[in-house]
Length: 88
Image 1 (cartoon, rainbow, N blue to C red):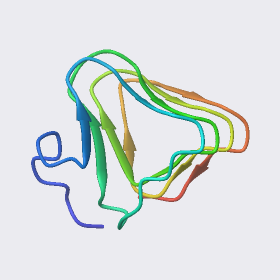
Image 2: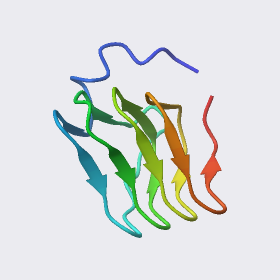
Image 3: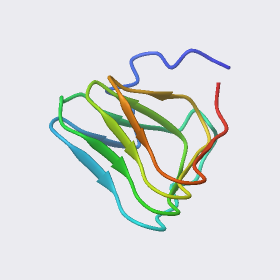
């Protein structure tokens, strides 16, 4: 997998405090499509949401049946039921 250079500033969706992707939201693109949160607040990926890579300085909350198609990085993780991590 390619290195995600300067990913906090080259994201398709970004935040500087906290970030929430709602239930059943689909953010389409290659696995290098980045969702980023440069703040220390929680990055929450909703129930049945489908996203690319997730990069966060703070905690990441992956809700039930969420799918991450790229890498997932954060300070800690809360993982719901049947979460899919398909990245590197």
